[in-house]
Length: 198
Image 1 (tube, rainbow, N blue to C red):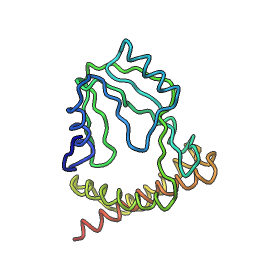
Image 2: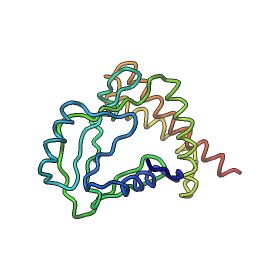
Image 3: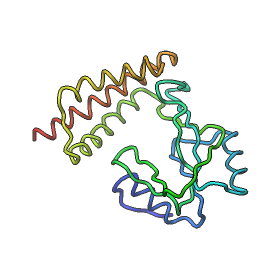
Image 4: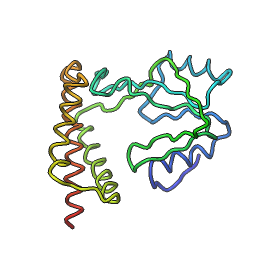
């Protein structure tokens, strides 16, 4: 078992990658699991890997409902990769896997099952936590907390997710997902404004 002081999600994942003995890494978060189809596809492709990275679709369960719209599905992710051709990078939140330009990408059938939130209260707590981290990250990037960012962008986010990305087809769960996404965007800029006014 390895332990490391937390700096960022990308740093933690890169450290974990360095501790492995095999070339290929399957990266999963604690709230994720493999569907039977995806598990079989991974076993099959690892017999004779043809690519340095593999993309798959992630399906999210929100408070007991599988979300098919809202921009949440198919939500393609690269989670199986040769560690010699990839590293984690990106902002403090929502780290991304950065591939070497020599890496080729394959696709795996099946879904990565993401059990995001079991209650709306849990979602609200995460929004409070993550919006603070996001605001601090925006502050370091010298971003602005103007009227457009604080109010217009969240409204546009809701309309895009709920109408154009058909979140309304996910019923009440879809409405909640889209409303909280807009709220999270609003909060991070309001908190950024507070940092700028200190």
